[in-house]
Length: 113
Length: 112
Image 1 (cartoon, helix red, strand yellow):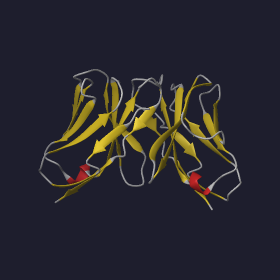
Image 2: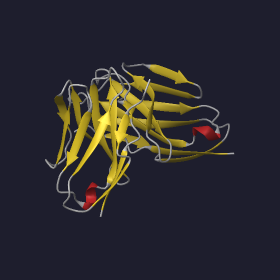
Image 3: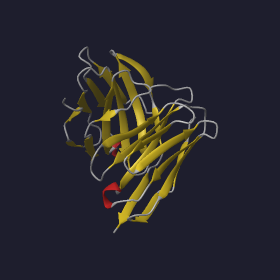
């Protein structure tokens, strides 16, 4: 069974640009959540989607957005990039999203210059 | 706002020794998770604890949950080098489902 696939693996952008990250969950998983990991702030929740609906959102500015498609694949977008957005962005999937283990992808390492 | 505190943040152990990592959280929840992260890698699920008194064991690791004390422990028995990694606890709830609040992580180094 294929794991959670995130693309791209690495990304370098400059301030003010926007970026789109992609996540393909494990087949049959309908919940996809996104986390930001930085050395200073640790792992922080961005948002969670289930059947194309956002069920929860973390405390991030509106520049961070996401969506989920009918095949459960998800994308997150960050507009007007800031230096502080440099981080590892992790996507995780599960069958229903609560009370079960999350399967994490390898992440997208975003560097903003 | 749910807060999750892990301690210690750094742990250097000798092979063969036992130790415990503690995870305290600030609001009511009965869903707690433990994850492992190797350097440069993603997170791997270790345990899912879903009720008061839950205990799970896998190899040299055992996790427990006391929801009344808002405390989970991850006990390491007879540590081996392969257990060197960062261990995170994460709590779901506090009025917010489908969202995990992570502790800062415990960097475990097991020395020969």
